[in-house]
Length: 119
Image (tube, rainbow, N blue to C red):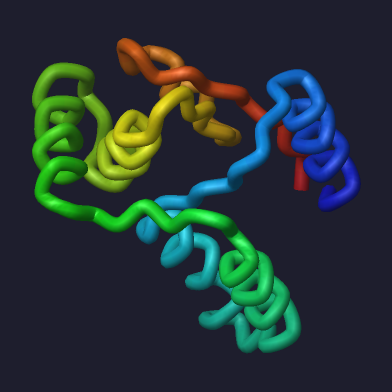
């Protein structure tokens, strides 16, 4: 699975000339839960190393929360998804990389849906 996702991400970077990787603090939390719960210390350490290397972390400040509130109220996103979308919208010219095609319905949000292989 990692190789398939990595190749899709590499293609996206090449297509867009992306130079900066940003992640919302909420996405960081979400990625850490399963390896922590399952006692997968090595995987958790790899995630932590990757997130530490990210060039920008988007914090959930008042502006992000306000935008997320609007997205939740008018576009039917669940709170975590609204916060992630609002984090991406707070950046200039961001592309939200996701496995969830539902983000495409958010006005003004550029998305790239990564096809995740079946588990």
